[in-house]
Figure 1: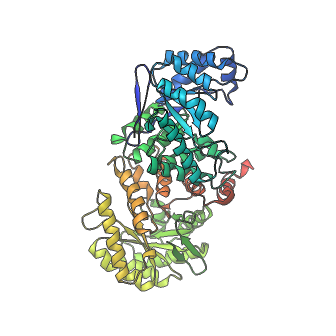
Figure 2: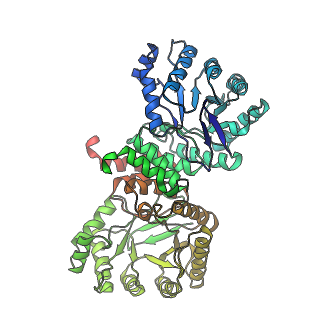
Figure 3: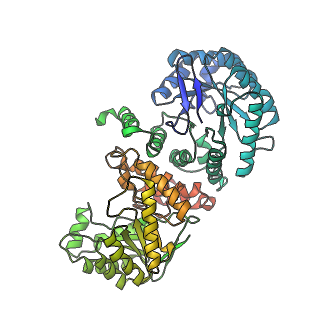
Length: 285
Length: 285
C-alpha cells in the first residue's frame, strides 16, 4: 500500500516496496529550550537551519511542531510552514495537539500534508479526522484511546481498526492513515519492545498499512540510548515500519535505516548507503 | 524447539524462547597470523586467552577451529580442546573441514558437542553425519550443496530439508541440526541480505529448527563493517537467528544481541543488558 505525501513541487511515496521514508523530528520545541525561545521571539533562523540540515541528512518529510505554552500556536504554525518552505521543497507533517492549529496549517499548506496525529480517543476522532478529510491530507494514527495505551497487541490492533473505519466513513482512504503502534520504555516494562514489534508485524500482515513509530521512548531509562534506538529501529523496519519519525542528523540512526533498506533488497548496488557514507565522511575518500 | 549442547559440567539450551546463545568465533587461525603461528608451535597460551575473554564477554559456546595447512590437525584439535577446558567449562563447537578431525575431537570430548559443519554436498553428508550420529553430537548444517550456494530461498530450504531427512535416517534428532542459511556479501549482490533474512524466517516458520549465521560475510566490501554486521544481526534475530557464530568481545556486537533479546521480551527488567553495560564501562558507575 502506498501513501503519497506532497508539497507544491515534490511527492514522496511511502510503502513496503520503497526505501524507508524518514520524517525529520527536530522541528519541535519540546525539550529544546533554544528552539522554544527562538520560536517565541518569532525568530525562524534556527528552525530553518534544522529544516535544511535534516533534508541534507536524508529526511524526505519534515515534521513541524511549534507547541509552546502561551503562544498563538496557529499563527506560529503558519509562520513556521512558510519559513520551512523558504529553505526546502520537501512535503511537511503538520504536528499539533490542537485541531485548530492543524486546520490553520492545512489551510495555507500547498500540497497533500501529513497530519500528526489522531488516536482512538472519541474527542480526537471527532475533531481531527474531519479536518484531515476536509483538506485531503493523510494522518498519523496512534493506537491508544480514552483508556490510555493498551499493554496488549490485540487492543492496539482493535484501535487501529476502529480509526481506519472511522476514517473510511469520512472519506479518508485507508492508505492515507499511517498507524503508529507506539513503542514504550523497555526499562519500565520489559515486554514493551515485544509488544511494539508484534503489533507492527500484525498490523502489516492484517491491515497492510504504512506505519511510523517514535523510537526514542523505547530507550528511556537505559544506558547508550542512541544504540538502543538503532537496534530497535532495525528490528522494527524488519516488521513493517516504513516511515519512522526520527532525527537523521544522527549518523547512527541514518546509517541503521539505510542498512535496513540494503538488507531488504531496496538499495541497488548499495549506492544509497555508500553515497551517504561518503557525504558523512568525505575525508576518507 | 530446543537444542541442548553440553560440556562435562554445563548444559546450554538454544531455542526461540531463550536468550540468544553466542558461539564465540575467535578460536580460528583463518586470517589470524599470530594465533596460527602459536598453534603451529604448539603454544596454547593465546588460544586460552581467546577462550577466557570470549566467555567473559558472554559467549555460551566456543567454536574451536585449528585448521593450519601442514599441521597434524587431529592432534592439534585434541590439544586445543584440552587447553580450552583448562580455562572454561562452557560447551564447545568442534570445527573442521576434515571429518577425521571432527571424529578425533569428538572422541576425547566429554559431553554433547556441536559439530561445525555439514552441508548438502553428497560427500559431506556421507562423511560428517555418521560421525555426528556415532558420538550423539549436534551439527551445524549449511544450506549449500554440490552446485554451490543457491541464490534463491526455495533451494536453500530444500537443502535444509534434505539434510534434516538424511540426519533423521541416521538417528540424529531434528533439534540437533542447526541450520545456517548463509549470509553473503551485499556489496557483491544487493539481494543477498533479503535472501538470508527471508530464508531465516521461512526456515523458522516451516521447520522450527534453531539457526546460526556467520554475519561477517554480509559486510564484505562495505565501509563501517562492524555497524553493518550489527544491523544485520538485529534483523536476523527478529527472523529466527538463535545462536550466531560471532565475536562477543566486540562490544557493539554483544550489545546488539543483548538488545535484540530485550526487545523480544527475553531479558527480565533489562538486567542482562544493564549488567553487561556495567561490566563494559565500570567507570560510569
